[in-house]
Length: 255
Image (cartoon, rainbow, N blue to C red; front, side, top):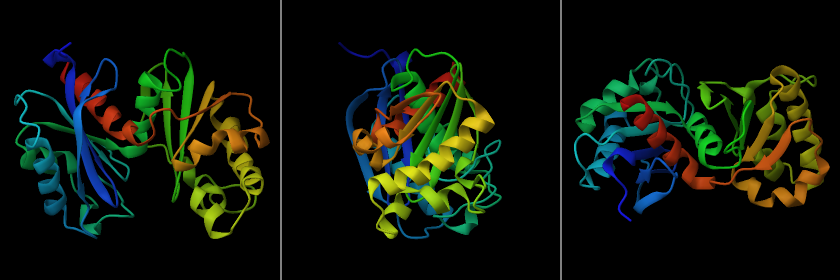
């Protein structure tokens, strides 16, 4: 069955190693056709990144009114990037939404990558159909986070920077990369992750807590070491979450 244009949007996910995009069925979160990916040039200037996004969008040969959403690996406040870690510092203070819109040639919605993943998990993944507060923690090089309440995103939470009682930021203590760097067993690492979860639950009282990132594929191996009041779930969408979430937000904003 052909997906109607009203249920289609393009999502593009800007990452430190690759920029990837797809046409998304915004009713199901599924991709329509193949994902396109172009490597991210190291510390590339904003215009170079925007050109790659434009190439990916143009490759789909879609109607010009199909909405476009783009994730960005940094906070985005009213379209503006206040700080960035893994891309050129030239993005700092720039209105990334305006930059992307100018290069793509149509309005582009830009949001934080963890926020996009959180929305996708709430709409299509592990928290689908659940009311209340959902928090997604993406466990990778750092710890990203998304806070969704009854389907509405509270943007730009940075729970990876929560200060723990031991004086360390959450992501410096329990990111997946720290487990690898310090050669921790899953049980040792889960004990550290418990410290983060305890703080998150104290501060936000979520109903559902979703753990994402590559390590979530081993959820069954470490989840038994964790204790939560919230329902604890592994992410379901994995690497498609950012694209699906970006497309969903773009469609919602155009509606």
